[in-house]
Image 1 (tube, rainbow, N blue to C red):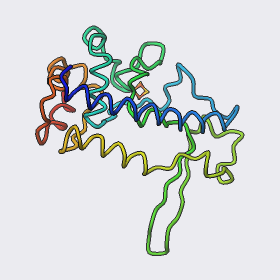
Image 2 (cartoon, rainbow, N blue to C red):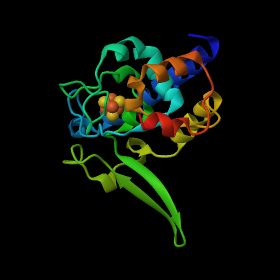
Image 3 (cartoon, rainbow, N blue to C red):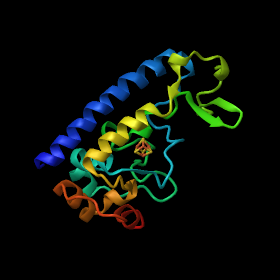
Image 4 (spheres, rainbow, N blue to C red):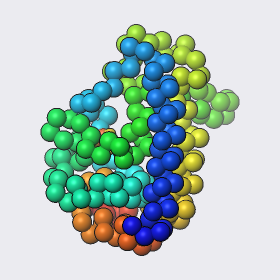
Length: 192
Ligand code: SF4
């Protein structure tokens, strides 16, 4: 791993750890309503596209395994195994680290601001989503902003790559070489 790759992967790993701590605190606060567990792949949809710095971490941590694994068939995330478990769990992207939590976001319109809330239907039974205190909710926005800063340091073009594309050895090699992304790379790689 060259310096540029190492520096950016390290920065992302530290940030992922922070996300895990924050998400874990919220998940524990949900008590028995939190039903996310190994083998549930309800939110592991196909075609997920992630920032290239998160793709880089996956290649850095699981490059050897990706060289021998077969992607999960289309229809579900390519990173799933036959038992419905994530094969890159420790390096999974941000969005997968907060799935299942009660989400909250603010919309601004002509009549002012409105807070929206949502949660995976598997975790909803037994919860009163409307009544949940703010500290249990995952606020959409701040973390995405921090991830964008980390991505911009690695790739000013902020290209997104499909998870399925990481089974292409040429893409893995290119990412791990530290070469800068070029405009349109995300589209080309995602179509492979
Ligand atoms: S990367 Fe892992 S957790 Fe995320 S959608 Fe794919 S299989 Fe699921």
